[in-house]
Image (cartoon, rainbow, N blue to C red; front, top):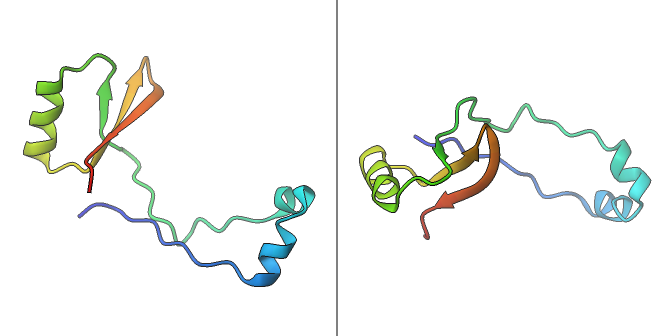
Length: 80
């Protein structure tokens, strides 16, 4: 089962407060309710389309991160 993030809609007071850039910097972000995958699936830059298709089919992936020497360079995902 893939992890999903849960987002809550901000109140109107929060939206008005967000117009001030300084208020955005002071805002606290609560990450306790967000599921974060500690080991997301990665593809190496230059992976063949055949390999990507095979991995998505066999593993049932919906998206994968493309990396080059450990740095994120892109995301591949299924169109829904």
